[in-house]
Length: 296
Image (cartoon, rainbow, N blue to C red; front, top):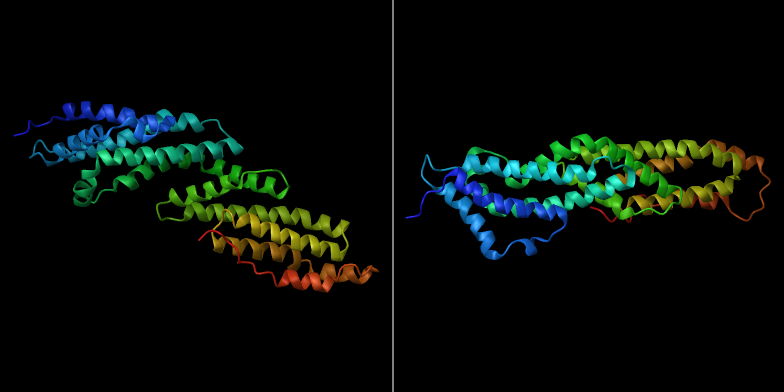
């Protein structure tokens, strides 16, 4: 008959594994930290403490230990890594730490897996996976979310202005907003709203300048190119429905609201016939706004 493990004895065994799991946040691969035997020792420790007869059954205590391990990993590694970062560096470091954190949480979840099979369902508690996301959300995302939005919008505008940016980083941020919501899309939807709002501001500033400095035909050529660029960019980091909303907005700002001004401008111009205004306008009006999105 196995000797009953006390919380102190079990925690002594688990703390060694938890400390090693934290090293994943420093960049170490899981395979370099645990042998199969070490991993099974940690799993068996949790299992044994869960199946002992009351009052030696410690499922609730182990659930709290798992949560505290997640919180300690965040406060000791994640928060210092992202603290005081801004703009591009904040986006990069957040995705870097989120990626490592998910691996660490999965590793820890393997030790405590028996809780998911028994305690979580019985107590109607959050699954280990959902708990790991909640901890990151509560300790990191809530505080950083406004800065993340601002940094992402700034990066999009830099891309519009022709600066070299990493569009993959925008895709990562978009993915993070979906994952951190655990099925609730409000973070992504707020991101979508911020993108649309900044897009409207961007073109409301740009359109009067184009109307002033370009001929009607040249304006429509620039509008067509702008729509094409917006479509290419947005398809790399937004969901298809968001891409369609964005392109409808840009199409309206560039061509819908300016139709009368362009018509009057064309009538006032002599025109050299090098570009057919009506032909280009037709191409813009018929542009398939939703086609080509790479995200589902």
